[in-house]
Image (cartoon, rainbow, N blue to C red; front, side, top):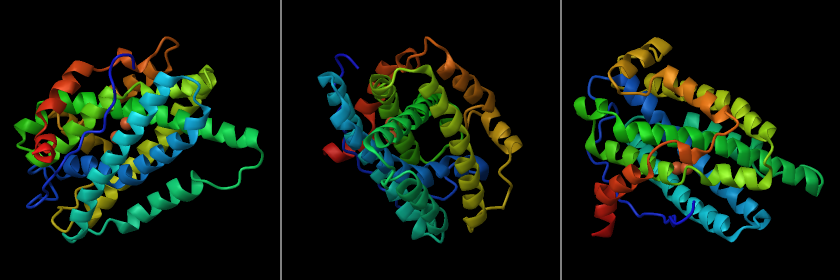
Amino acid sequence: MGELVLRPLDVRFDWTGLPLQWVPGEPAASHILNTLHLLLPEGERWFVETFKQALPLIRDDMLREDVLGFIGQEAIHAEAHQGVLDYFATHDMDPTPYTRQMEWLFRKVLGDRDRGDEARKRDFLIEKVAFVAAIEHYTAFLGDWVLDTPGLDRAQADPVMLDLLRWHGSEEVVHRSVAYDLMVHLDPSYGRRVRGLLIGGPILFWLWARGARFLMATDPSSSKQKVTIRAWQQAAGKCLLPAPRALLRSAFRYLRPGYHPSLEGSTSRALEYLAASPAAKAAAA
Ligand SMILES: [Fe+2]
Ligand SMILES: [Fe+2]
């Protein structure tokens, strides 16, 4: 990461009065983005556990500092999104049928269990770091997108939710190289990088589609509109979601031999947002 020191930023969000469809009149866009709250608390806690396990393998002091900063930031992200889930649960939208599955996936399937000898354990840990690196490519992509998209402001999206997404997105942009650098430090092979994306990408897409459909079906105020690729494209046309094509193009960039996350997104733009985030100011007050 060079000169930039990664520090977790305290934030405070007040969800009082948040509508479940916080992009007015746009249930599909609201719930496709709300799926983040279903996936991230368990997912980011798993990132934290994975990276803590990788700490003893790091032989570079600067990278270790970055990984520690990353761990601190992801832990706060998980709790911030958990706050939204807790709010949903008190507003007739019980997320537990879905989040129990996330717990099973991240704690049991991808968690700690006996995987044989030390070499196999180490290899599985590096494989998990490669998944995280691929997912972090996408969290940085989404962070960059949410910072710049005019559609959510135009649609008068809930300002507290927009701040959550832009604060989180900014930190994703700022720490976008850490997981990738850790993966390369532990295994520089191109095969590891490709596998992380080819396995992690479709799983993430599938979890996301299921999550959006679950929320749409569970939301008592929803028109039960189907979450389809067409609905996604329509919302993307209004700049309420990133375009499917842009996501695909981004995947191909990750596979380029000369790829590095520092070539994507703008750190200065993200730092600018963090300095102005209402949630960060509320926590500092
Ligand atoms: Fe995060
Ligand atoms: Fe991240």
